[in-house]
Amino acid sequence: MIKSLGRMEAIKGFIQIPAKCREELVGERNLPFETLVNGASARVDRRWRIWSSSLRGQFSAGSKVQVSMAQDGYKVELALAEEEKTVSSGEQRTQEGLEVLSPAPLEIQLPIDSVIQGRKVLYDRRFRQGYDIVLAWSDVLEFLEGVPDDTATLIVTSPPYNIGKPYEERVELREYLEWQRKVVKRCIDILRPEGSICWEVGNYIENGEVFPLDVFFYRIFKDLGLNLRNRIVWHFGHGLHASKRFSGRYETVLWFTKGEDYLFNLDAVRVPQKYPGKRAYKGPNKGKPSSHPLGKNPSDVWEILLNDWEREIWEIPNVKCNHPEKTIHPSQFPIELVERLVLALTDEGDIVFDPFVGVGSSIIAAIVQNRKGVGVDREKIYTDIAYQRITEAIEGVLKKRPLGRPIYRPKGNEKVAKIPPEWRTKSLSEWSSN
Image (cartoon, rainbow, N blue to C red; front, side):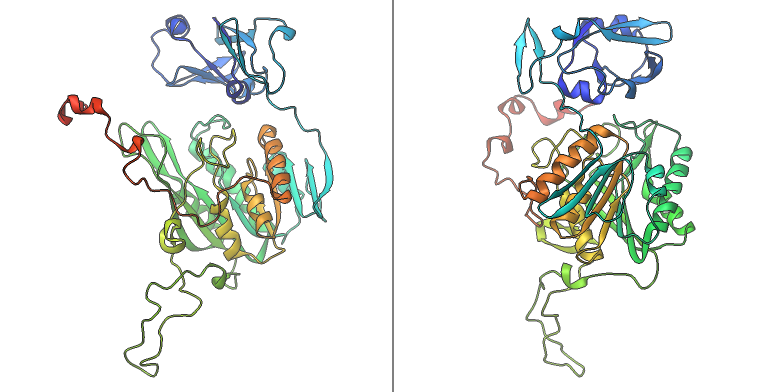
């Protein structure tokens, strides 16, 4: 089988198996299944794709690769000479009937020590003091060893969920949680006494069963002596559809503090009063306004549609294909999700740290709210993108969704909001699955 790679395939480490080759390469095995490719761990998923971390970035976009069976799995190798495989940067065309896309951006060489719009920025493998922004490509535990204690006022992250996404090496849940415990323990060391940790997590799925990760992380943080202040539900309207359970549309943010005397900027996140004219009907303040003139204290359900923290659900769009912040990262969270935490839990000039920074959303949230940012990730394809986005954020040209913008609601007269004519040819009962 010869396959021409698209850009996303080349970056993420996927090889799509064409329909005509599936019987030859997969046989009668049930999808998904674990295997090997070129001797490295791999899998074939339900979309007939071979994936392995060993394939990430190994071939440039437009490359033709030969996929064949090997004794212990699969073999993937180039099918043409290097000069025949690529096209110039920015070019997208069809050649000999095969799709050819522009190659991935060149890697950024480290270290980079620069000043951008008056902010000192370091992109390197290790932490160094004296910078407004420190971005690192490194193992998180190795990086944390070089960060002094009592450095960050806010630690906020969304760790890998260990559910088999392209950038994850799937391991047993117990092993995963033990690794996360080590990271959390060291994060507590670098947290200032008045600081907060916000861990944003979803669910671990095994054999169709859901294991809510916030339940497991709560025990980790409590065992390490932290106090839970809020469990915030982040609700989003779009995502993958499940077939044997209700489709997941929320994740949770666990907000812990290191001590009882913690920083919380209530005035920075107050919301408009629902009934500002309401007055006390009894007591010493009878007849006087009962509401605070700056707004009310929000609860831990956040819904941006209301532009407030009115409930314990924050309704913030997740970053999908038409989101202005979208990059190649498969699980990118929106900047505004972090901005609210930054405003409430830090002061200007404080340090915000993300131990799984991905494409840099947490650092960008710190930048736009005049804080300092530190972040690390093991995937250089993502930290390179993060550096580019951070530069654009400092220069004020980064595309982002404004904090507090109401979520778009269809009016009902849009073409995509109308019932397709094909649906009217059958009764609804005929569409139901048995």
